[in-house]
Length: 128
Image (cartoon, rainbow, N blue to C red; front, top):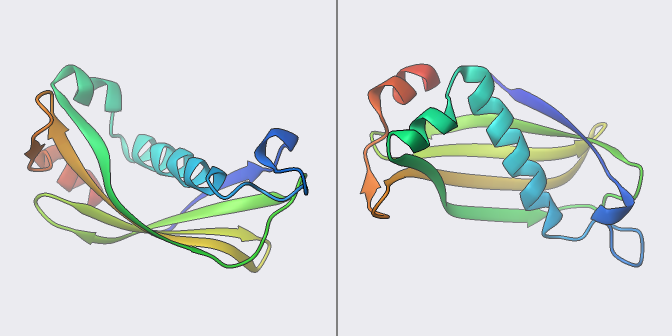
């Protein structure tokens, strides 16, 4: 199942040439991931209160095309792998049918001491 999240490019997202600054794609895909897990029913505030948080372990990113001021983009998020300790997602930013940015993101959970922990069973159940 693919989750879609709309993004409009604002002036603040661009460089002097009116092109989206490269680091902003990471912000776009983060918003989409947060929206996706929220829609699945994962309460990140409750997780944090229980001493567990999501963290990004790895991002592999490809910049394919440019996006510009006022573009309407869509971020597509799809789970590609789930283990007891990590979640891997494919994320794609599009403008219509044009691919702009693609990333493979690996997320894990950590406890309050900064140590990796197994993904909670209820999280794994939501993602299956």
